[in-house]
Length: 485
Image (tube, rainbow, N blue to C red; front, top):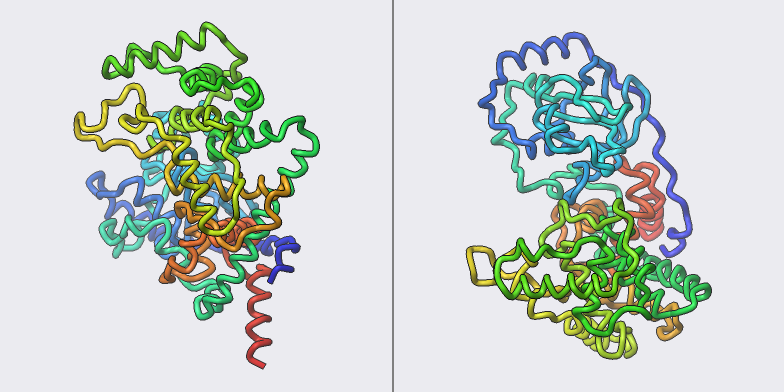
């Protein structure tokens, strides 16, 4: 199976447009007029589920200016900030279009939600709404407007209450087992072998990239610092956090934790406002950070690179992620490195050391400067700045490949501490192993979880949705046929 990871996944062949009869369109319009009222309990989440699930989405869809629409791929359901679906593929009057999809109840919600001025929505190819209406201002010029009300309500049996909203985006798609699932769900050992090979490839790619950086950089600590900040920035803030690491090199970072945080927050343009704090402790700390920064100002990020907090969970806010970075930068002995063995005991110990290095009582008692202390009000207290799952992710994505790049590890360990299951991991697992598989197959080994991500990148993204041109599915089928002989 390892040889699969040297192939490039071909794109599926383009399919022709679906003909839509006048009778269907007339029936849609008539049924819509009879069934729809403003009291129909349709929420934006309902519209997302309808767009995503082919068993709910009507076959006959049109843009609001009358062009036929064929949904080849509704896109990946995005549970974070930005458009609701990423990388959708549509055919508009037979012309293939790719881009993001944003879902609203009414067309004017696009303007009301401020998407016109948000660069994150610049690649929107379709604005899908429940109700029809005028095209909103600021929609990308080539984006189409699609209203689903008429087509959905053409089915007299449609009822919003029949949609299990809690089941999306994972439980319903794919509706039928994928080719890989038909084989792997019956052979757990083969599934583990495939995921292990993919995980080793993923860690190896990261190690090779870091090795090239070490050959050109003047400081191994600086390479590690940039990788750590990039990982802490996650997807939405990775670029800005990496730039922070460049303008605040690790050699110039203060060894005092509070001063390190002041440097990072000041350079990121997100110093807290002590006038908006909830109590004297938070106000005093915020004031000290500001005074520390203005006594020794550094270079700052450009305004358009300021870390984004919109859409992030409170535990993943830029403030808390940079507090974790400051704690790691000021840790005794420097940035934590994987120096011991790569056996399970050694890796668990390293994860614990990352968690311990990021311990910070102030941030363990409150979410941020403007929030109340834990125990005050109804809001529960925050988690640690770096918990076990986040530390495991840092180990898999940074520390282990960096140790390999430095020559301190001979290869990729067979086991890595498990991290949280992400949306891409869950989606890939459903495609590879079926809807009803047991997640225990991979959820206790971070290497197999990394394998899910690499399989998605190498195969699922490029052949979704029909899997017919997938080299992994073809190889598994050949392997199964050979074993039957």
